[in-house]
Amino acid sequence: MSYEWFISLRYLRAKRKQTFISVISFISIAGVTLGVAALILVLAVMTGFTDGVRQQILGNVPHVLMQSFGDGINNPQELVEAANKTPHVLSATPFVSKEAMLLSKGNVSAVSVKGIGATHKIFTQPLLTLDGQPIDEQFSSASIDRPGIIIGLDTASSLGVAVGDSINVIPPLFTMTPFGMIPKMKPFQVVAIFEKQSSLVDSFYAYIPLLIAQEFFDSKGLVSGVELEVDRYDRAPQVAESLSEQFEFPTVIRPWQSIYGSFLSALKLEKLGLFIILGIIVLVAAFNIATTLIMVVMEKNRDIAILRAMGANAHSIMKIFMMEGFIIGTVGTGLGTALGVLLANYADAAIKFLEQVFGVRIFDQAVYGMEHFPSEIIVSDVVVVMLMAMSICLLATIYPAWRASRMDPTEALRYE
Image 1 (cartoon, one colour):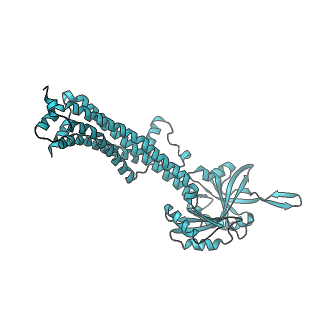
Image 2 (cartoon, one colour):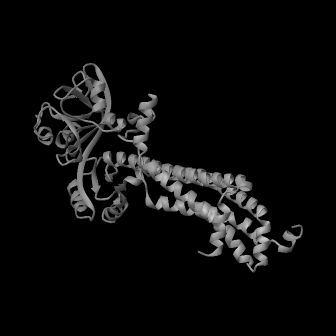
Image 3 (cartoon, one colour):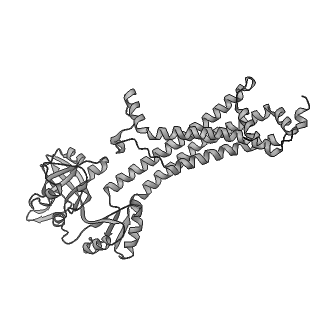
């Protein structure tokens, strides 16, 4: 151990006449600890929220959407074949979509009715059914007079229906009769009810067979678009760009980022803002470190003069006090990182414990559409926080250490 390290460690130890300085050192370490812990915890929570929102979005909307201006797509099979040949595409499903009113037992609910095939990803999700028969078979084998429909739990609650009940679907289309124009209406049987954490999706979508939808919505041979699912969500722009080179206007191909990217960008901007705001906590703690070192320099001016008289150069004196600040910053950053990671890992358990103890609802799962309090630790975020904290702490030591190195030993010992 070099003598600079030895002296730095000795200066951090409390003596009877230096208790106040040691208290300030402890406060400095505590400030860095709390600042780093708060940064890591908030970044983990914001990352968890962003990923949770993204999973909700990508669980209910296509990763890539292929559409056409005009009445619809009249060559869906060509688009599906091209999409299936594109790397990273897992599935390509044509659909027909139309807003409609659902009517049952005197209750009305507005939904977006989508005509889908038996390979749609809705069938891979948990569904409430009447018996053990596979839902895709019930869905596709429904009668023409009363075909099957899949609705969300919130929609079923609003209409007061259960699996097996009938509902009437009324699209914004009219039929000419001797008595004038009357709205089109067709009875459907509820073959399944799906439940998702996002109440918006539960209320907004309903699914019927694709061929029935084409007939009912006067779209024979046409589809509203083709939904693509890719193996990784971040590859959607790459897939969209590749398909856009094959199909020109009026075909429009958009990845999910172009539809919901602005919302996720807002979450990222909020995360950056919180990082900057909470980084000020570490900056305040760094001022405490600077204050501590200035007071130590004032207290140790006699020691500094003796060290200079014994042959220590200005670089060694500066190194002593920078090491002292480095020790404070390292301890504070280390403790803060451990505390932040611990809180981030057990955030959900801590929230539930506080809810049970105080009898209050802190995190409402129904509001946020998430089963657990979101918290995801990203190693790169933790590393950035540690580097930022250590950099600020080291920068705070420069001026006090420089002042100590510039001290004239003759002036310090003149009145001793």
